[in-house]
Figure 1 (tube, rainbow, N blue to C red):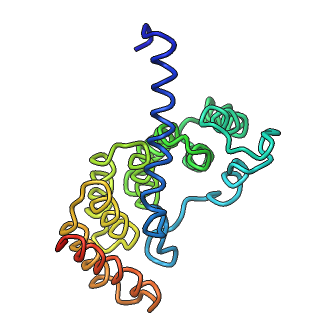
Figure 2: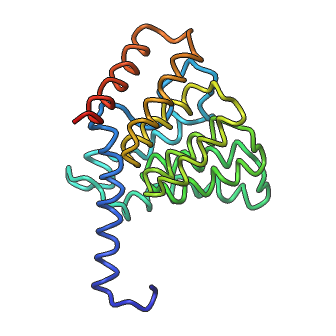
Figure 3: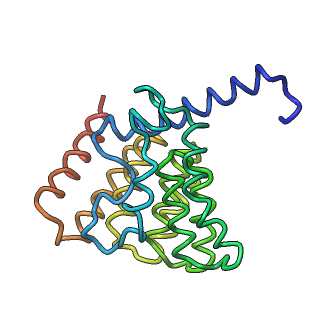
Length: 220
């Protein structure tokens, strides 16, 4: 691919941008984002998920862009700048799981899902039973277009904890929207409700609505 003409390379970049934003839009359509929807459940969000990572969220004034949405390349530069001190520390402490997670969070916040997944993967090599990080990695794989990889990560998380609410919820979303597998999605969400009776009435209602929507879509 490195030898392809510049015009084709530009087209590839445009396709990547379209793919990333389209995958993110999939979940926005149903009003839910793949991630830590059930923050009160067994899974615990990775450290620093809302601190440094939030600093690279695109904004109207980001990088003096005059109110326009930054491109993926611009967002990557923003993330690279923020992550540089962490990456430098990782050179001497490559198995520091907190640093790996923080770096992954920065790249995920900037929609650099491939890079984020790489750091989450390294974190999982240190702590393979960390369900929260495996869920984050699954989200990144999904947004990057690797639906089967995302499902595989969630299935691994559920082997470690069959009742994990976030994994079951996301598995349903990805099967429904990524594989058009309404039956598989409904099965995951029904298991979620069955194995997590402590969920709030609001959360239960949202899952029940998703089940009804998926079943209705299957009938039509």
